[in-house]
Image 1 (cartoon, rainbow, N blue to C red):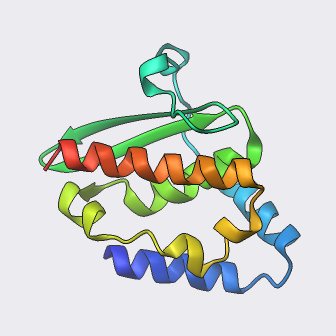
Image 2 (tube, one colour):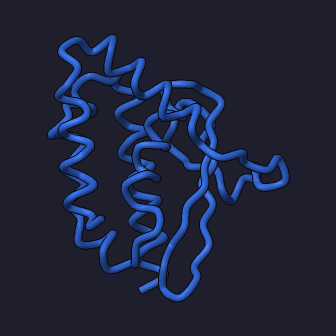
Length: 136
């Protein structure tokens, strides 16, 4: 599935829910789907700065494909990083950098988060972009 198709699928998924409470529940379910994150990887260099919650993001590059893994100590934040990983893991650096990440606005995520969580979202996107830039 192309990145555009994946973004459209997320937009469609979120549009099925009318209330933001239901969308938060969906995010929580996404967070539960994250694969286990090793305690040994929960290091300061993998911690995303700018998040109120603690969010760790690691990556591996194989044959030009970037694969992300993440964890958070907050359930909604874990869902947010899971959403981002679902979209951008398994892509090339070029694919990631071609995205304007507007999917977060299109689903209304950024405007429906507290200011501190919205800042954290921006930090998560920034880290994903930085990793992609370093792997061009």
